[in-house]
Image (cartoon, rainbow, N blue to C red; front, side):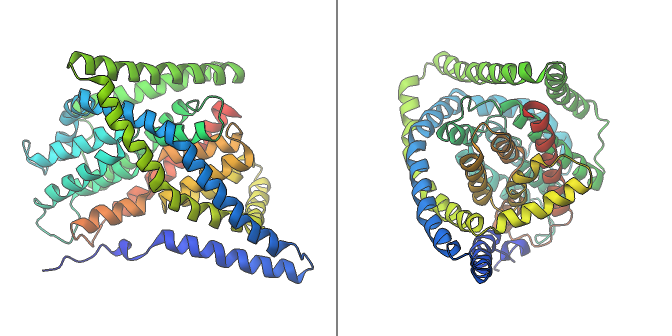
Length: 420
């Protein structure tokens, strides 16, 4: 029997967004041409070639940095970082998923997926996630309807609980940021808020007993750690905050790298050979990114060159100003709107913002923090639920979108807090 397709998967959001950029840009160009702006269509056409060239140059420049990070992450993976995090998280998920038997392999797959996500190991996280979903589906009495455990697993995935946003660091380095990791702590706070929002939404919908000592212990530990960081930086002047944030981020990330190497040495691995093995994948990843980045940067480029993006943002800016609010964040809204719909689109918006405003500008940093705050909700729901034939998602979509809203709002606020 052929499984029913997940209903949200029937809508190709990325295709719809991409096509809309061209149609709207063409319509705006014709309208402005009608008002006597004869140069507008040549400018839109020229932006196609300029942005295609920019996308290619960015991807080629990424190769070295991607090779570096993928080599480091391979060392961490081989040294047992995923297994260590799995042991740490297993007691929590055994209580959050009471319908899953204590020793069922689904718990191990779920926790390993989360551990891989935390470390930013996308290549490992997705196969582990699909395996976890298949194992949870084996316990599902209604094969077309998502279970509580599957919904919790998906919402935490969509909230992007990532400690090391390697891809964002890589793009910031390529776009000329003085301190590519200076968004590490703001992004960590934002992704924590996103995950906590999604978790609390699911807990309310599923009536999870949060007063369990183990659950409270984990929540207290995580909230205390992130809250402690926020409290410490709140006592600093804006200049000291930016300086210390950059220093602390660099120290923490370098400490993680050294701990990976130390653990690999302890396990008597050939650290250099392991690094080279992982670094080889960097070139392949950079090549794979080229067509996607060309497609999205060209579409965004014609949309901006036509004046459509600026017209929309000006309208939003006027409304925000009428409410008496600061309007500096408005230029980051396209990245925020695209984030739940398209990972590639949001990434291209982030790069375009850094190209337009500067990697170390307020908007450049905000789009990076937004990118690190949450994940592509509709894509993840479509792929994971579609892989096991689930069509009735129950409260997965609203809880996932609440997590997105919490993470994006936190990203905007925390960027003001650290960089305004």
